[in-house]
Amino acid sequence: MKVKLILPALTEATSPYWRPIKYSLFPPLGLATLAAYLPAHWEADMQDEHVETLNVNDAPDLVIIQVYITNAYRAYELADHYRARGAYVCLGGLHVTSLPEEAAPHADSIFLGPGEEIFPQFLKDWQAGRALPRYASKAGRTLVGVPPIRRDLIKRERYLVPNSIVVTRGCPHHCDFCYKDAFFEGGKGFYTQTVDDALAEIDRLPGRHLYFLDDHLLGHTRFAAGLFEGMRGMGRLFQGAATVDSILRDNGLLEKAAQAGLRSLFVGFETLSPVNLKFSNKPQNLGRDYAAAMQRLHDLGIMVNGSFVFGLDDDRPDVFRRTVDWAVGQGITTATFHIATPYPGTALFQRMEAEGRLLHRRWNEYDTRTVVCQPGPYLTARQLKEGYDGAYRDFYSWTNIAKASLVHDTLRHQLKHFAYAGGWKKFEPLWNFMIKSRQLDSMRPLLEAILSKVRGKEGRGQAPAAAPPAGDSGMLLPLPVLKR
Ligand code: B12
Ligand code: SF4
Image (cartoon, rainbow, N blue to C red; front, side, top):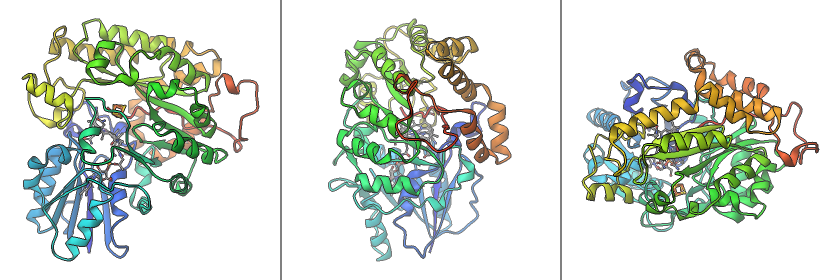
């Protein structure tokens, strides 16, 4: 049996804004997760259109396609193509879950929600000749006993961060712009692997650097504590994401994470306006001292990728300058800015639709770079787009990179900050060259060599908690995952 798993590229891949490096970061982890359920003797081929040209002249028996909002049209086109060639086509992922009726005409079976329970069920049904047109993940979700991800299908050399990993699913919170509640509807919205399984998966990954793509790595205190304790001494360096309130909690978890190798954290600050936080149902950020969270991270030598959303209803024309100034003044290493984008299925989408504020439904433009709904009373669409573009420009100006670097109190940290931020945004031609010449892989050790470990107050003048292997260093590029 021949199975083809495809991650289609978004329309942007053909546009002048295409940043090849952004899409050469992570392999298709979701598809590799699903592939683990295929019988071992089946032939599986996984292709990621972001990093390779698809071969569409083949004749697989079964085609599995992952659909995000921005790649949906391309996904449907590929699905139609393979159905016309006689393959059985399955569509699943976030966008299919939000809009099953839109996806269904392009597939033999569609899948709503996470795949760990429904995909093996489908495989059984399909082999018995009674596959259903629709499978929805509801009760009984678990990561306990899931088979090891088929990492052998990942073309590691094409990614800067082949070691992406997810050890939890979902998040305990309910922000109204987030994909999470819609995707996990009808069942558990936050659950974890067992600590032992997570550690075993980490053990299977070569090299030192890991990127946890979990929505909230610190979201389950007991699990995270067990994980970090288990990772201590493994000599790993890792990046992940967590919320402001979890950073401020004085429960020793962040310290454990730092000791286990946490070197940079994606933090959803989202907005500096309490009114916006309230409207976005993000009470976990309300009244929190963002500056104290930054200080705590810096003290532990953890760099910050701050995420901010523009275009929420309380935003005014000065929001862009104020946000950039704050981020620079706090020594944020990389910032990810987003134009508020309502994803179908979210509370924000329902509100925008009810208020007649959706400008269009061209999903390929729902890329958080394009204004797709009428902003609040204080901003025009034009101000929003120009302000967003300007924020990126300003934050990553050499002057501001230098200013933000100088916020750190040791020269090593300052230099590192400068190199990371500059390296990520200022050397596009170099990244493109490395991708084209298939040398991305070789950048990893190079980066590791250039970027030595950042140590904060706790480490200064002391021996490191666990003696690191010779040449301790980290691939510390705080890769800005555009998570929300
Ligand atoms: C890593 C990541 C990226 C990476 C690359 C992703 C990759 N190579 O797979 C990069 C940086 C390139 C990226 C880019 C973008 N991303 Co992104 N990204 C993520 C992130 C953080 C993790 C994805 C992941 O690996 N999850 C873990 C795996 C195991 O889960 P999974 O992929 O969802 O797969 C499971 C299920 O979905 C399901 N499934 C999936 N496909 C199928 C198919 C079948 C047949 C079946 C049965 C099941 C099934 O089964 C899998 C196992 O449970 C998510 C947030 C999140 N937590 O999901 C956002 C997220 C997916 N991204 C999002 C967005 C919006 C974007 C961008 C548009 C952002 C931007 N401003 O540029 C771009 C465009 C991406 C595109 N190709 O269209 C949104 C998607 C919203 C939506 N409704 O579609 C998310 C949810 C973030 C958010 N909170 O809003 N992203
Ligand atoms: S935005 Fe972040 S904190 Fe809020 S629900 Fe989504 S993952 Fe959780």
